[in-house]
Image (cartoon, rainbow, N blue to C red):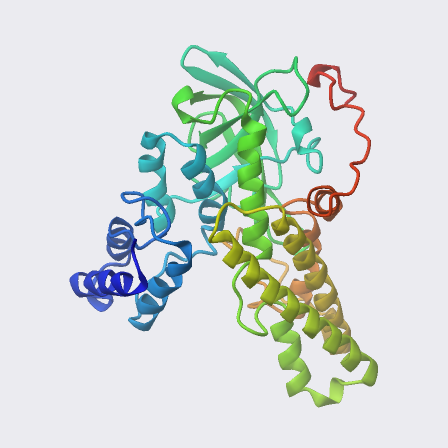
Amino acid sequence: MTDAEELRGRTRELLAAHPPAGTDHMEFLRARFDAGLAWVHYPEGLGGLGAPRSLQVVVDAELEAAGAPDNDPRRIGIGLGMAAPTILKYGTEEQKRQFLRPLWTGEEVWCQLFSEPGAGSDLAALGTRAVREGDSWVVNGQKVWTSSAHLARWAILIARTDPDVPKHAGITYFVCDMTDPGVEVRPLRQITGEAEFNEVFLTDVRIPDSRRLGEVGDGWRVAQTTLMNERVSIGGMRLPREGGMIGPIARTWRERPELRTHDLHQRLLKLWVEAEVSRLTAERLRQQLVAGQPGYEGSGMKLAFARLNQEISGLEVELRGEEGLAYDDWTMRRPELVDFTGRDAGYRYLRSKGNSIEGGTSEVLLNIVAERVLGLPAEPRTDKDVAWKDLAR
């Protein structure tokens, strides 16, 4: 069993062989992966050492103290938080060795082709079709709300392979090459003026069967691994005290006493406490992950994340008064990441509106928490045993 002292020794050996000050950024990241110090809980040869997940902080602390480069995790969050754990659980050995290293180093950006114009909250109703032709699948359909599709080399994709069975049963999970013929990415401009999201059109895209994850027709089960990890990565991110949305408004409160009122003070105190409770709960959730796969608790954390971001950003606009109504830049951009704290209050207010949609709508997550965490009776589902092709659309 690898222990903390052994990991410190391995990390120091990496730093001695590849001094951060004199080593190319990408060369260092590749060496870190090959040394098993990327994800220490992953298997040997796949960026890890089979060590307890809780020991990752030991490696991270040593590398941070030495000024080592990181892999810019916010830019490649979909790959790290969603694609990687799904590939690790369901991928073949060849798939794991092909995808995990460049995914972790950030050489290859990933996106998620799940939601569709007619299948967002009811994702299992998706209509993108994949038809088997020999050793390949021919895919046709449209996906939407696809973050980073304009940057991505690879995508995790779910498509309908059998329309004659109920909607959850006829789905298969694939890895799609975003540079293949027939893949068209169009910007989807948002209320912020930016287009970090995209819509993706798939026209006769050929995906080799070797890029299928899991069994044919078992894509919904595979997708659950992705979705649970997505909600943990969104709602359970590691933050310092006053990290995230509560930080900017707390700084404004301290620096601008002329803006203060008793009512605003009471509301800010309430949200500060809720943000801190949410932060500590996220830390507890991450510690629970050490023992196994993410559970449905991540849905609750993602719910809290969305609600708090919207309430805090609304209060910040109100606190700033007239200047809170200003907006810094409506220029159409294709950003690489969402920067909540690097922009102004107006951006935070507008962008947070999407938090209750992305990563699973709040309405759907409330059902998940009610049924699968609290054990409450499920709501009636009349389409449960109806073949997808017979559903009203």
